[in-house]
Length: 90
Figure (tube, rainbow, N blue to C red):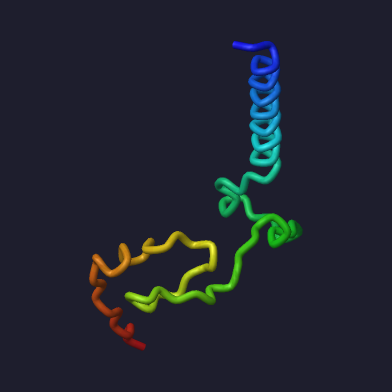
């Protein structure tokens, strides 16, 4: 393996390590795990959680989805037929 190639591989490896460290720090700083059990009304949770509008519809089952949702996640692109939901009693 040439010296240039070794150096490039080393640089890429270091970049990957740096990315993993940053992600680890972010997840540690922004972990919301079990937060419902220690809810603090003074915290601004909305700055930490990002949700889009559910403005997309599945062409097969008409389920509303987020624009970033994986295609076919609701009904496997029409392969699974879902029974319609009944209106709950008052």
